[in-house]
Length: 171
Image 1 (cartoon, rainbow, N blue to C red):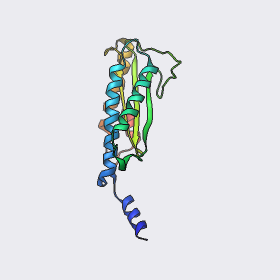
Image 2: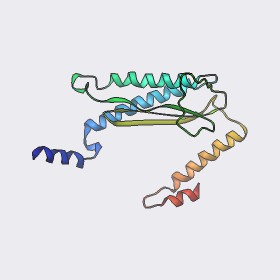
Image 3: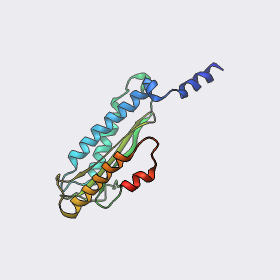
């Protein structure tokens, strides 16, 4: 019966009160942040999207083998929780082409990068949006600015006890 009580106590605690769990979240997040930074630097004009995704996935796999690598932790599951996806312009999300697909980035492409990894099931995810070359012009720039302004309006509206309809109205 004691084992069952200990298990119940473990689930009553939040992950912040359990340092081992918090460490796994933090380690996964650090790997994701590093992989995201690398992906951002690789997203340049004429870069192959499939190669970027493969490079970032390989980087995350390698980094995951470096954390919690002592004998006690060798049995921890770890891996990619969300493969690197690079969605361009009108593609909403989750585009990770096969190596046979040859789609390259162009200057002023709007690029959405998403990725994630896990350590023992505790996931770290990261995402970022960039414009290839750093600048957009014309209607594309107007749309990016409108999305940013909608985001700012939404964040100002979100509050404790608020409802989703209030946020939608502001956007």
